[in-house]
Amino acid sequence: MNTTTGAVTADAATQRGPDPAALLRALAQPWRELHRWPPLSWLMPQPHLCLLQADGGVSRWAGDAPVPGDPLSAPFTAVELPEAQRLDCRLQLPSMSGADLHAAVALEVRTASPFEAADLAWGYRARAAGEGIAVHAVLASRRAVDQHLAGCADRLAGRSAPEVWARDDEGRAVVLQGYGEAARERRAVRGRRGVYALLALALALGAAAAVTPTVQVKLRAMQAAAAYQEVESRMAPLLAQREALVRTQGDIDALRGLIAERVEPLAVMDLLTQLIPDDTFLQRLQVQGAKVTISGQTPNTAALMNALSGHPDVR
Image 1 (spheres, rainbow, N blue to C red):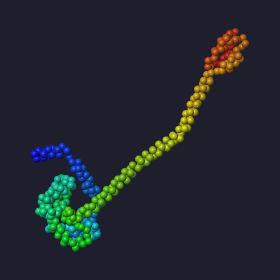
Image 2 (image 1 turned 90 degrees about the vertical axis):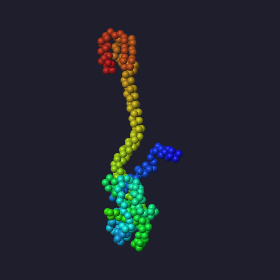
Image 3 (image 1 turned 60 degrees about the vertical axis):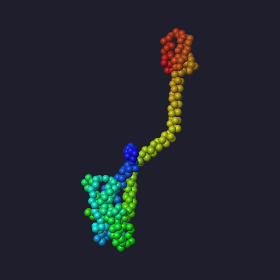
Image 4 (image 1 turned 30 degrees about the horizontal axis):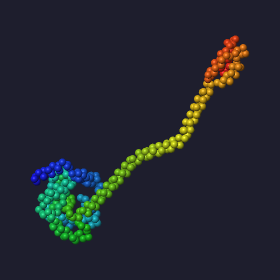
């Protein structure tokens, strides 16, 4: 029964597909490590630290390298663990994300540690090596570390909670976890956020400078369109009056045409009375527009036609 239930549960988990939370974590992991990529890593501020060296010296550090300046004025403190109180473990691992690398190193350290789990203090440093990652891990007894810190009490007088460092083969810091490194990391996170904010502001200003000419042209076009609409609205009454005037003028021209094609009957009768001789009489007179038709009797048709055609109003 238990075997069958376990198989059914596994099948159901397979059918459900990938975990959305795990997918989101996988997508967000590269962004969390963005500050490690050049050239962004060159811009990130590194909080300064006063290192109390195992040989009794004091130096000022920023990140992985010593820097000039007064060590005692640094805001953070680290105590270097002597080589006699630590174990070194070197690993070669395939390329993986930061979270997966931490889990893999933790597993290897617990496997290789001669100390009890509650007494184990450890840290590691990783670097790219070929197609994989070379890891230098440092293991120590937490009781031995506490005794060493107690022995440095005079040197730590007035200092904040110290970190515990070891140094790898190249002299770079290997930070043992669980001591005072969290405060420095919080300061570094705040600094990175400030850098990201400045970069975002610079990008925004650059984008604004790039689009400003286009925006200005767009605003000018909008202003021109608004001015054109305002002029058009002001001209609308004048245009309407002009159209009405044109229509009126057309009506007048049409009326003139009609008047030009029509003659007054009384004027026609008066003109005919003047032009027709006394020996000629009319039997019929018809006026249609500008056309006048007459019929009657005359002793001399040619003389009558010459008299009529000789008048300027008759064609």
